[in-house]
Image (cartoon, rainbow, N blue to C red):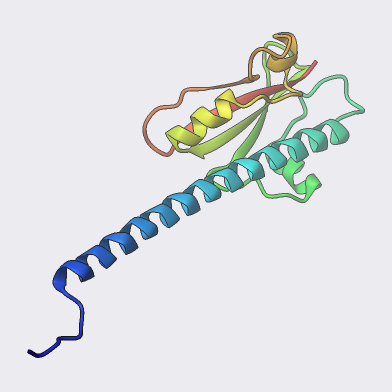
Length: 153
């Protein structure tokens, strides 16, 4: 009798199945980490934008002088967000003592996450006694969802 050395087809299929499972897990973990990093970056950018707007316009009685290109140039930051969209600033027409930060170009899941996040310094969060997130958005399928957050008095 001769002893064969080598692997059977069943053993090879088993090894490939294990490798595929490990690869799928690694890809899912990487995607989750990238999503969390983007959300963290958006949070930091919005905080910097709000601080910058307040600092630049602190001498005015209202925020009616907000101009996107001037504000972003004065703060030396880009209006591009990590999702490929932009940040936009506007005045709340019903109250010129408030301004709105819009985050454009979001996927449905990222839009939902940012709408439910507690934007602690926003008007909606403060006026709801910290019960609401302070953000609003219509999160539908696609990559063009918008989240709006109002800041000011």
